[in-house]
Length: 191
Image 1: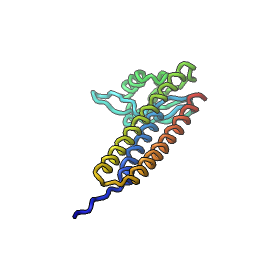
Image 2: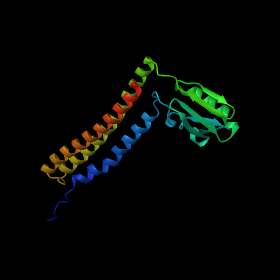
Image 3: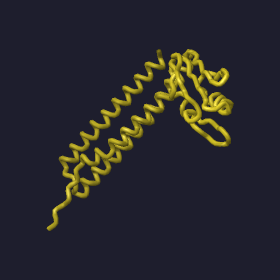
Image 4: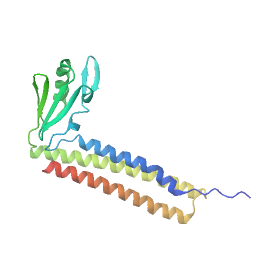
């Protein structure tokens, strides 16, 4: 008689951790693009600029710096990029107009209006829910695999319940990370 192969449910849970980490990294990147009262390179570095019939992220065409808390300075590698960069910046809706000063472009960020803050908080809430949904999908996928392993007799019943608890603990841990990240951004928007 052949002995049944026993699955280790921990492997199933461990396999989703990198995906959960990716979801958290995605949230970090997305929230960095949301304008607060302070200037940040991430507000503009990935803006797509059309140059010579091709599209490039701004960071490939210019040096970007923050000389003052509410100012972004863009120094194109070549003067011929200025027009395309200005056009791309005007389309973004970051709430400030680019000013060309000889061979550099300055963006002075105005204070956030109350209405704009409310819009940003709504956007923040949407991004948070998007990532929480991703986390839920990964939890469901892992739980389905664990249950399938149990139905096939490859995971013992007590391990199935242990797996459910560990999976929920992991999800709770990532949901806490999401809350911390969102709370930090919310404070930036409100201040």
